[in-house]
Every structure is written in structure tokens, then in C-alpha cells.
Length: 131
Image (cartoon, rainbow, N blue to C red):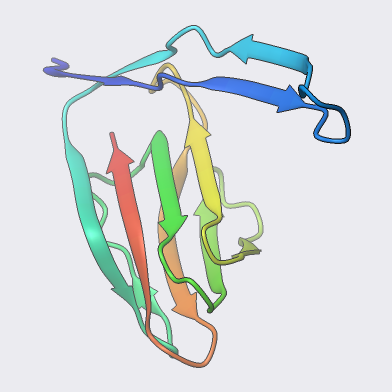
């Protein structure tokens, strides 16, 4: 039985900075999608080594994932394995970059493993996984 509510509370806003004042082109509320979860892993200063560091999963599958590269100068590679045995996926988060994967139910999808790798050095990251 779910005892945690994981709520994604955010608004995506796009403004035209070539004009003054900058008009808003898009302002889209995400309307607080919510995942009913039973467990969570959170590390505000996860250390991603240059050789790669596996993230500790709170359960076999994570349905909400948040990673932010806290470095001011070094890239962070995120590699993960999706549910269903598909090919592993990876991408690079530039300094300050954010990755969010958020499902509102634990009925399908999610990821089963994630490794974070600093580009030539240990990179701090904020990491949250919920299941």
C-alpha cells in the first residue's frame, strides 16, 4: 500500500529575451502529477566518480527519477536500463542540467538501474528515485 505521495510541482515558462520587457510566449503548468509510492531514495550530494557510480534503487523499479548535475564546470553522464529489457540509454547532463522521468502509476514503464559518471572527475549530483 502506497504511503508516499511524490508530487511534481512545476511550471514551464518561455520568454522572448530579445524584447524589453520580455513577453511570455508559453507558461504551462504541469498540474502537479502525482505518483503513489512506497519507498524513496534521495541523496542531495551524490558523488558520481569518473569510473561510474551505480545509484542505489529503493525497489526493483523506479517510476520517478530526478537527477541534477550540481557541478559548475563538469559534465555528468547518466546511463539507465528501461523496464522490459530494452537497450540501455545514456545521455550527458551539462553543468546545472536536470533530468526528470515521472510516471503517475506503477503499472508499466520505469527504469531498473542507473549509473552516473563524472567526465574525468567526481561530479556531485542531486538524485531522487521513487517506487
